[in-house]
Figure 1 (tube, rainbow, N blue to C red):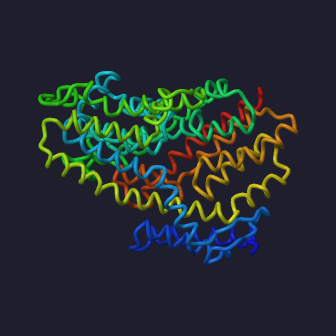
Figure 2: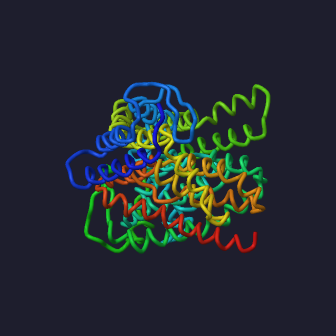
Figure 3: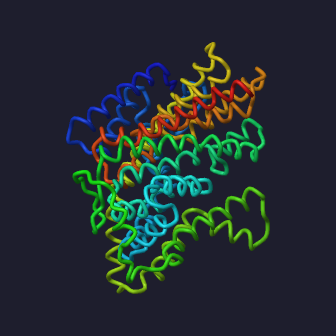
Length: 470
């Protein structure tokens, strides 16, 4: 069976329209709306109801593709990579909260960066952490620090959380050794070391722009503070209280080393894994470190360390209850994250993304704009930044090299395009918004979709400026 690209495109437009209407105007929960929209896209697009062999819009045969297979494959594939980490992360975060470790972290950041620089502190933290680990995992693990800073300084957790999320996603999308940028470097055949140095420099203005947006546009508009139980509630705006924050009662609060250890240990293990894997390290010792540095294993180790150090003063029953409380909050995050993965998968399985990218490649668009536009388009229609940048690189690398354009600039353009407008089909969109307690669709779009687009827009300007010199 052959799937018609135009028909799939119509199905996508109708599906997205239905999704927006369901989320904005009805009582249907976002997870159910995502699954319904995914089914609509597949039905209108002509995807088979049961597994069969098809020829996609790009002319390639795919076996076992069906609407249901795409839904279950996308849901399971997304949660298979980050679901366990989300579970471990929220349990660790709950231990940070109940033990006072999050309070110690917040106090340490206040002392280190000084008052009024909380957004910068969190953005820099995310900026560095996301180079070796995935932004989804990083945000789940680091978000308790943003909540603790909000509670102590009375700054909105939304502006603090968005600054953290932006720092994480920018380096995740641009700087190797995260898989997407690393794959793009391989496809274009460019020097990874030079690419890392260049993209770190380019990432800084993006992070600054997102910090400004969070502070100037979100801090007062979405003023929300976590209470003592961790519930994020809306409140009348008030100015930050730095005096209270710098003189908070720290009696009984764990020390800095004990507080940061469950967080730093997984990051170090994952970083060792990344370096050792890239270097092709051999031997039992290195294989053991590579295993321990797998994100699931590393975050699990961090959770165990938190239980036996930070949880020491508490009874077994108390710690178990607190972790179960965290697990309950993870349920909705996992469901909507998996739902977004299902929507992205059906677009990938149908061949629609490749069909649209191939059509764009045949137009008379200037060479440097081609990878940027294809990556941006792929990001919008299927949600995954990694898929967007690698697809754009695969299509445009031969064209750009044959045309004499800079492969380095083409690779940067592919990565920048993958930042565009993260919304309902992007798992990180749901992780950020749900962790920050944002449930209204209009607010979700303004809080995160606009932020990611600001990073993209700054990157586009940087690519155009670089094209003058490269």
